[in-house]
Length: 525
Image (cartoon, rainbow, N blue to C red; front, side, top):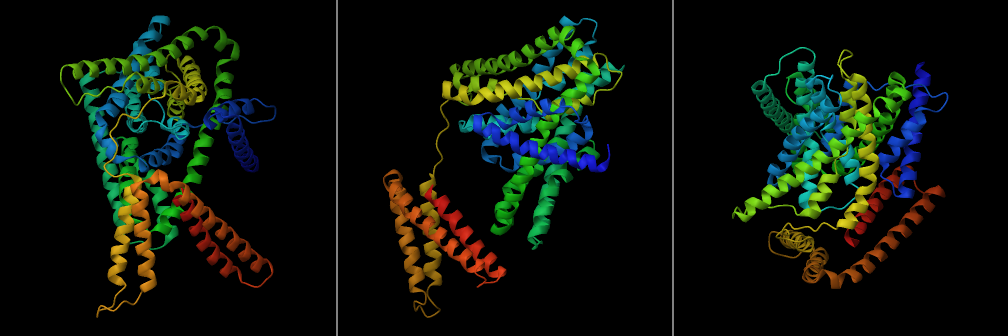
């Protein structure tokens, strides 16, 4: 393909991403499902060239920044508190699904070696961070359930990739050593965490010495790829290295980054993540054409239909079996008096069992299968079928299932509410202004400023005492503020259009109005 044609295709894909995302929002469909189906349909249009997704490039291009984004926003306290449950899902559930899928496939296709069957199990077993995030950001879940799903999506890819490597090596003639596999997994995980922490704290040290906003944002963007590539170069888990660096990034940025950098970086990062997520799903849809061109539609529909349906059933049921099995075990421990054993309850367990969307990792690993791998064509078709069914069916129905099941948040509330935290901040501000409002001799030099902060402190304290009663008055207050900002913006633009102010004045004052508007929108609630 000519370079100009390649660029034109990229523009077509970007336009398609925008259109499909807009359509998905209008009809209430998850964007990931619309992009996946739309990309598959677009790939078969006449004149559209075939797009091949290089598996190694897909992993290194898409996975690190999307993992970093998830780790950056991870609630570290809840992540640490629910780590046993996260490991149960990211290690135990992945291993269990691999074994179940391998056993089911070998029962249906006995001629396929056990190692090859388990290789497919490792491919389809880990739910994908990209697919999970694309769906979870559209729903509201209890805090514990949210922490389990976010943590699982960050760590389970490492488990699946390790299992895949050992299964492929055994299928191609090597011997499988269980003890070596466990040792390798621990080395990859611990080594990846160490590399990620080292790179994350090195980033913090560099950020403390940087003052240029653009360089800070660019360096933060490169952190995800630096951690991933460093982990892979040192033969440890690049996935876990990226997650560890992202957690350090998210934890330290509050004290390292100035506010203006955080706002600028967040806007840039949201746009980048949106583009990458969208392209992931539309390229997965495009990959369907390559799979069917290789295998043949007739072959896929006749000889592969039964194994693929069995694999789909195994993938879905294995997750339910693991989650409800663990639920039963926790309930038994609870009855024995072990207070730390806290079952989720059937409502949250049902939601957790249904959120097993697969995505870019499953496809990339499937495409990376060696050409001489037994059953490779079946594995490719099965991997795509699992992605399609889990993203489209599970992703589209998750919101309705949550409304039907209505899982309750059983975690105890935080010690300080939002209103109480606002009151504490307002009081701290007032105390500082009360000191600075006087000169060295004790004379009051900033009376209006002191009075302003005193009134804010008293108002927020009253609001914290009964937030619901004061909310209508607060909203009405900030509606007036927003109207005033809009009037100021209209006057600013009038002055600029009339040629009475320079562009630099326009940009400076517009920035002030933007900040005032954002502050009012946030405080309005």
